[in-house]
Amino acid sequence: MQLTLEAVTVQRGGFSLNASGTFGQGVHLLTGRVGSGKSTLGEILGSVLEPASGRMVKDGLQSSVLSMQFPEYHITTTTILEEILSWGHDPDQVLETAGLSERGHNDLLTLSRGELKRLHLACLILGRYDLMVLDEPFAGLDEEARYWISSHLSGRRDGIIIIISHDITTLPHIDHLWEMQTGVLTDIGKVPDALTRWDTAPPLIRYLLKNGSNLSGLSCQDIAEAVCRIHG
Image 1 (cartoon, rainbow, N blue to C red):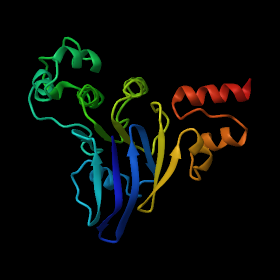
Image 2: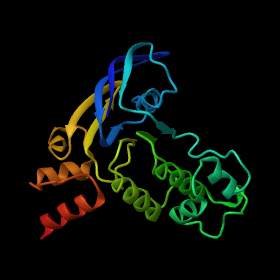
Image 3: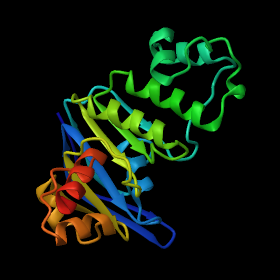
């Protein structure tokens, strides 16, 4: 099961995107600065944007879903229960996963922004998708909810999950690291070996590596353990 980009290009005004690489089974993190082309690439990976040239090859992928940064969630019905049923899920399971038990008959518009995001993400992670492309999935969530979605993604080991984010303060277990730099996709490699080759790594990661810490990953637990090893 894999997704391959073969010399894919996109041109939008003065912006050019160039991407080649293969996404295999596991959890991938695609980082990069704002405006580097991450969301545009996400639209290509999610098959909502056709490249100007090149092609995307899906091997063994039968189903996919794209969660875009804007809007952070979608509303197609009136009540929470109706929204869950529109996804084809078991309402009780989704309500429990999203922390919204006993609220199925509530109007969707009575939910806070964070609750709507949790409902949207619960419907996503409980679906059976070979490919999940999540653009800034942690935006609009408090710290507790970030840990919640990270733990669910870490526990999902089937298929391909591509997380597009410039925020690495809360992450699930990451298998592979990618970066967009001014429209060019770079395959940094498998984690943790790739961390030493990450030229634009966040300050905390650079600090840990500089101090000889052996990072085993990018999840909060991995980073916390590395910090504890340094300070003894």
